Length: 111
Image 1 (cartoon, rainbow, N blue to C red):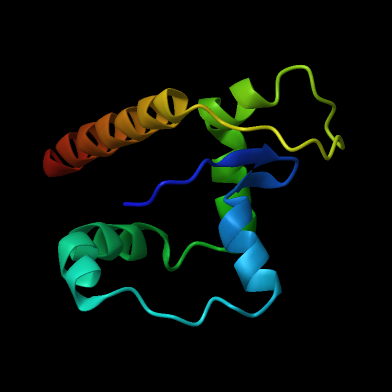
Image 2: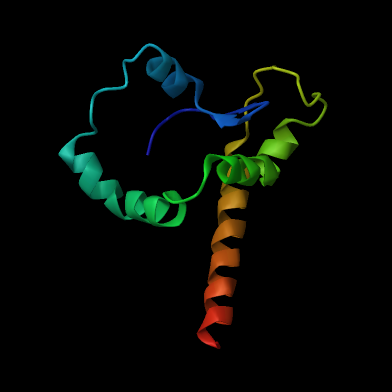
């Protein structure tokens, strides 16, 4: 979807390039219609799953992911180091999440 590296900041995963634009109030341009169409299923799934989630829970989720924990190995809880996360670790987390969701759906079908 984009070519950027997530970083394991002490408060969770961050895309520094996006955060920088946001902090300078420069995050105003909408994606192209082509991009919106292409990624609409992903957007819909993310909003369906997470839109009603409180920020404290989102933080707990992000801090529970192995990719973030793995990148933070060797850094203290309050260490503000800018630590890049590995894409393969993020993909592994996503696959684990997908598997957990599938298992929950199967369990809920039997109820």
